Length: 550
RNA sequence: GCGCUCGUAGCUCAACGGAUAGAGCAUUUGACUACGGAUCAAAAGGUUGCAGGUUCGAAUCCUGCCGAGCGCACCA
Image (tube, rainbow, N blue to C red; front, top):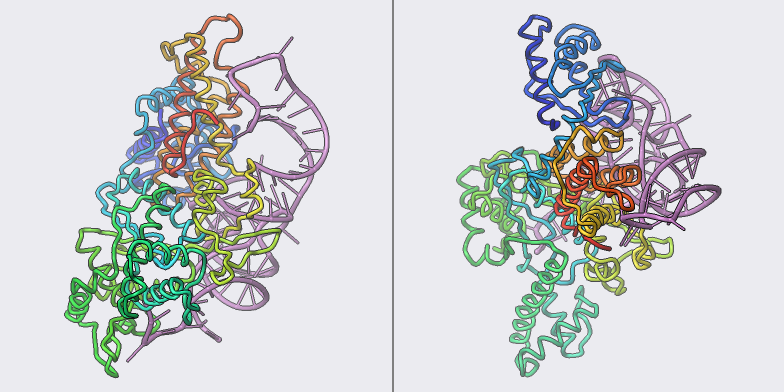
């Protein structure tokens, strides 16, 4: 019996109690059934009685008794206990619990997918770092979290498109171009320009790719260095992201919004909605109508459009492509944008509670020699995505960045990263997977083929623990998707790996010596394979490999 | 000054408003002539920043205070 089926059974028990007049309460839409943390509390627990106590006007334990009486009679349920303030602790009979292994093996890589977000078209924009330099450690966090989130949302049934917004318009691009030109000509870096080894590298590449560029006029040089530099830098970022396993369906150019006239069109649309006005020679959007601190300028007094105008046009463009929900993943230094972004949505006549979601993530702090490293391009101590991958590899990097909530700043110790220790919990999870594969290898070596499955043989505490843990997976995926929090999947995998390691230690799977394979051998092979499927599916959601050997 | 986010074991981090606040690392002590010991078992480690409030129940929600990070442009 899966937790989903059990949940339905509990719901039926509630409904039956209501219909029998034992409970005067509205039947809830659904009830949560969770795996018990403590083995003394059975396989699964539900707090439904606690939640129904108040509307029913009865003490929680009395409500629990009514439900328990009916639930105990359900096929597959061995025992129902009432505990504490009114929890229902449910123990399944071994056969019923063990059936889950068959379900999982049958489902294979589909196990864990659901329909919680079925039919929802979501656009997920993340990283979107300026193409004036390599992706640094902060951007890497969004690459790991964003790409994992995309995978999780898809697993929950959503129609997801991922997107990287290239800020290829504006003064920072001009500075980038002139910095490249200066480097190529051996001139000092211009005011507020970009420095670093990568600037010299790109400048050299441009000189090599465009023969005679240094003989051209200053204006022509600026154009060549800006355009070619931008192209090379974007290509570099794309390569880094590709190697990191972060996939973007769309690489969207800010400049294209201006070239296509989308910005002007957007302003007209907002004007038609009645939120645009002229003042002091500039054109404004009245974002204060929708909770923003102050109104925002769309077109400056000098006729130039603002970055904010691009944002508005970009949002409308995304919506025109049929995206129902536009998710933005921004760094903590951009949290001031949330208000104005939501105001854009409201000004456009959309619902800021639904059509846009802004996820704010905190910074990554780096430690070296026990002291915080303040990254500065000028000091040349930027830590890039390529550095991190070189030190610890894609798997460990993605995992360590995706296993924490983005609400909290995380601190990475460079000394630990570069020493390549086994401190990263990803190895704990991956090792569990290799052990599962090891069992298969051993079985092949002994010529054992998995025979008929007798689920009732999986009766020890380690086996039932593993089964109930495996049953949680679909619920975890749905939760991670709904909360937009990939770290729940990672935490689940760590717990699952622990449960598996303990099962492995206490429950010998393969026969010893020359002993023949028994029904118990087969049953445990089914269970081990089910566990392997879940770990592999979970790691895949995080973009981390599930190795057969380490 | 105003606003957003955060404050949990020595360190890095978990915990749909649920039961005795959990893992890993570090520390101490045990376990292989057996499927890979990158493992397992055990010990120790906490007034969840402080003070109130809400309720069957608060690390979680509300208020105030303390502390940290970040943001408050006709910049991008």
